[in-house]
Length: 329
Ligand code: ASP
Image 1 (cartoon, rainbow, N blue to C red):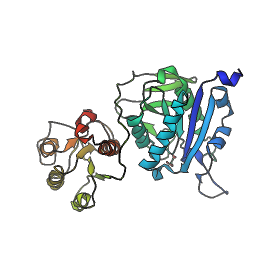
Image 2: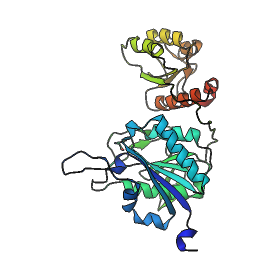
Image 3: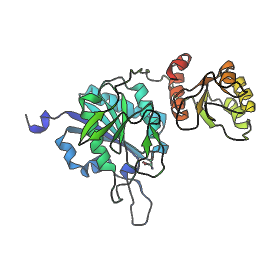
Image 4: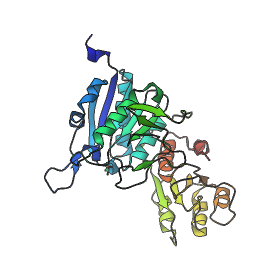
């Protein structure tokens, strides 16, 4: 047996994003252009840690990923684990990372880690963070302590759970946070050190259908109800509202949500960026007591974007009646 054959098998796929971006000429904007092979060429030491199985599944900015593409990525990742990989790493854009990580987490049935990472600086910028993040992702992916934690986001030497992680800065290097709970762990001298125990996980079956749509709208001052009316008229099957404060909307929106809720699942989350929605504090029209009495679900800790992912997957598997059990207070 060669030395390489003793190493664990680790699968890495590139989906695109800044981590794969370069300018094709000086002064031009960067675009996804480095495939997985080229990204790994920037990090030769990775081959000392593992036998690498690599793939470039797409090369797109992460705003252009779709649920169908993610299901294809998931099928590849599952096949890699079934073929004996100890873990899977996905490199992608950071813009939608908080959503894709939660999507994968809800569908990841293995103890083996699925680790997502990206970069805030492109491969052509000095101090590019892509190679460092990829190395950290591999160190986390190969650590025994990472097993049983579902899909993890590893970036800027922090380890985040996919339920909480959010991109909270547009261009800063420290762009990711897990509001409320903080990162679950960090990289210390190349080792994954966890500060929180693994949470019990529930996993959904693969969706049986994919054509359905869930709308996400943000409540804001003096907004009329035209877009809410359009949600039903355009055939959306679910609706998420990024509500004011503890999960509130105007009285006009509340009336409209009350009309929609008997026909499609409606979730109201908080648009604030951290904290939970209330259940029993405020008594005005448009607050949580009023909304719940109309059949609207309060999101609890789950941010609006992750609520939309959850609702889309539940609708796809016909499990929307279990929605409440997925919304932690
Ligand atoms: N700015 C993004 C990134 O950090 C672009 C994307 O999400 O694809 O990767």
